[in-house]
Image 1 (cartoon, protein in one colour):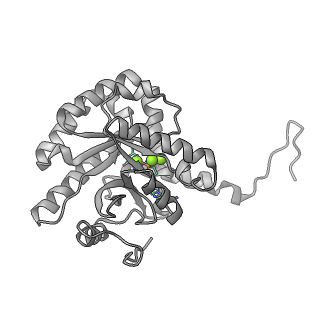
Image 2: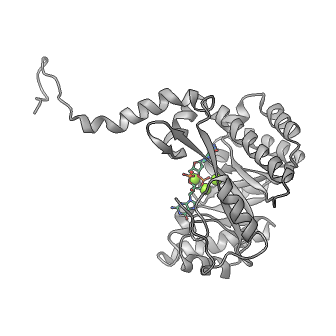
Length: 292
Ligand code: C2E
Ligand code: MG
Ligand code: MG
Ligand code: MG
């Protein structure tokens, strides 16, 4: 064991301890080339209408198919991308890819639902953001009302002025806006009422505590009540159990998103699901088998 004192001593590290940072190092090194090498992909997670069980929209979630590390989740590479600014290119790529998918679904006459895309406030900082969105919409000829941007509550609080004007522009364009991870950012009603927000997404940290913590149910009830009163859509994220689903339906939550219906899935699988369940409800007995 290496001594901690003394000038000429050196530490001996166990190599296993270095694996997480080695992975981080490789991911950071390779991220820049991920788009050019065609390694990014989008998975879709359906959003289901609570009252009917039908698919009414979906969230686009980015993944990275790394040649060595396999399918890397956004939680692992987006923080790196936020740091080195690469998040802007990733975000633009996601928007373009989603619009291309929608255009393709339209071309082959598949059912189309609105798609929500996660966006960071960083994107609004660079002055080409409006022209980029406009040119992607034009080039793909996608109806802007089919696109919803998800912005986290924390992001809005940290960049209030910037986000406020950005949301105004999006509204003028016809793009919808959802407040993501709601409940985690301690924002007050007064923050929200000035912003043009169409949808509130209740964070899964609340949803997972349904039937576990009484106060959490009261919080969720008030969020749904508030959203309904403000004429906003309200989506519960991370719904996994029948108990959670029953509670949310009873509270008149508009939409449900979570593993109880489907994990985020590749485009072809999402299309299969959509064709089968856009008109008919997803029920437990008819629940399709979905690979991870
Ligand atoms: P988010 O926007 O809040 O997305 C929801 C996350 O919850 C997704 O994780 C999804 O797979 C997961 N989830 C959905 N249902 C369930 C469930 O029933 N149980 C559990 N345990 N988890 C569930 P994912 O795909 O790993 O994405 C994580 C975060 O990364 C997203 O959180 C979002 O903030 C960010 N992200 C993903 N794609 C993009 C993107 O294209 N651009 C940006 N800027 N951020 C993205
Ligand atoms: Mg989201
Ligand atoms: Mg969320
Ligand atoms: Mg989140």
